[in-house]
Length: 162
Image 1: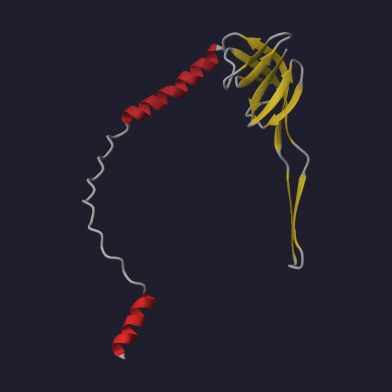
Image 2: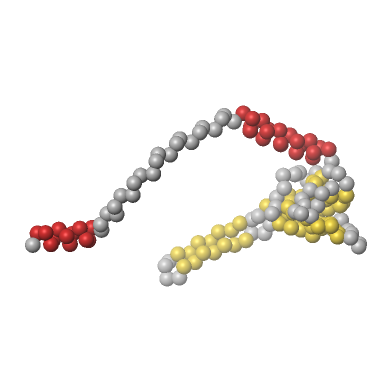
């Protein structure tokens, strides 16, 4: 059985027992992480595709370590301009071992967290002051004749002087 999960804006094909390097997750080594954004689940003869996510499927993993990748060198160079700039970047990662792909409902702790997130939004919407009514727009002005360009004005002034 395998699944395709979404983590850190990327999609990963995972089997039970795989070790992945994902974008940094806020978890300590030894913690269990749940991935609820499952795009596809496939067993031996059945494939389930989500729209966008598959419901009642959860992939769990154990955080092995937090770390930083190898340095990526960035060099900017402009020829004949006496300009050269070199920098580097080390991306943070979280190494996760996939411990299981479970079917069934998500744990209650996750559902409680989702409800807690929804309640403040509902309270904030209730506390919003009444929206001010837009002021009535004035009646459309009569179309004024188009102004002549300055070049045509100068030409007219020259003709009157002669």
